[in-house]
Image 1 (cartoon, rainbow, N blue to C red):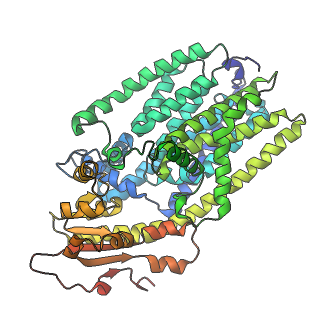
Image 2 (image 1 turned 90 degrees about the horizontal axis):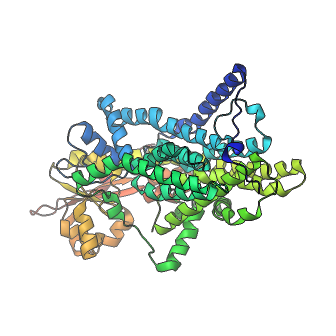
Image 3 (image 1 turned 180 degrees about the vertical axis):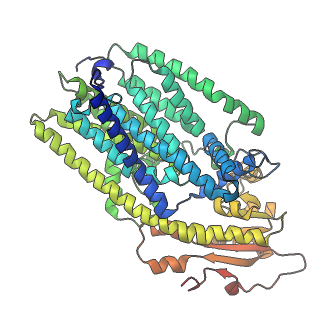
Length: 579
């Protein structure tokens, strides 16, 4: 392989006239507008707000109201994961306090999340071009093609689009991941300060980013060209120091404020590390890797079988490509082709490393996948075009990978469109008409000192404004203590804590109704969206929507005896009510 230096592989063309530079910036602006459209159109059509946003936003609102960074005043629990994900919405709420969550969320979306999503796309393209070239006409077609497909894949990847604007911190993760990967390809060690800043941004976005930072360190080392690994290693050390210095203030403050720097969400959910031994880990690794490009919660089913097949093929190509990359080297490879080869190998190494992390989890939630998916969107086209470089016929060397990448783009577009349709229904029927309605009803029905036990904390916890006892204890240390120290299950936690209210799904009621304590509770209300879901007919991934479509609300009986309740008259969304 040619041992060209990084500078020889970089593609910006300097010294062009002002007209060429002006054209470039027009193209950059046009691309930025194009990149902003998928998340903007998605959220305007669906109005989607993810359940976990309201857990974090209750912290944000209390902070802005001067009550501290707490879920419930006077109770310091680190019940959120993202420092930036809680602090930025708090600032947004200060600008729109009268609008409750809606004004703050839209400000967060428009001025933080969508620009961050666009920034991630920009860094992806810059990775291929080695920066922003002053004259795109000088870029070889062998570089333009994989760059175009990589950016297209990113803009069509469903989970990246939806979780960038539904209230989660995902867009910030994508921005910093894009920047970190771009800088990892520059293995000269000269941009260590910027790399350290991007790594610190990841840590401020989500503390489990220590795994991502380690992945980028490995990528930087792997992508280092012969003779440059010493410089790359020095850059990694310097970047790590910068990251530590920039993240240390939050680490120290959270430790002092909450008594631990580890988010309570991590403590409650557990790590799932090597559950089931090596065999269990390998099984999870294969399964979770196959989920990277599948729709949200694919284990519920309800999607065509080819969706899982195509998504799995994409994932496992990215997962395995680095093992094949030594055999794809072509002697006398030009600088542009060498760079694409580096990008493909580095992207695959990072993808592989992060999938190992996902395999350690007992269950990775869908917002954990977009960073891996983003880098996979880079590795996939770069790898395909690098593999085709062995074809002597140059037109075919471009045609074959272009055809495969086009099929992938159509697939991703299909999943995005169908997921958008799915989430529009999810938001209206499940979130607004069921969980939000349950929260608002409880707000009026409960007494101020009443405690509410449930599993899904977000909507119901936020809109009820109640004292929450959630399972497995994201914001409830007493629940975590009973689970960790005494091995309690949901059925034994409830009588131990004796909450005044229970909010349960039908399956949870089925599992608990024979427990002795259950006789102490009476049915107070039902929230049921299943009739409306059934009237719609086909919905992709319908089982996921059905999972949260029905909730029973139970109230603990007073000592004086059981109050007579007529459930059929106390049911929200019963039968044809909304027709």
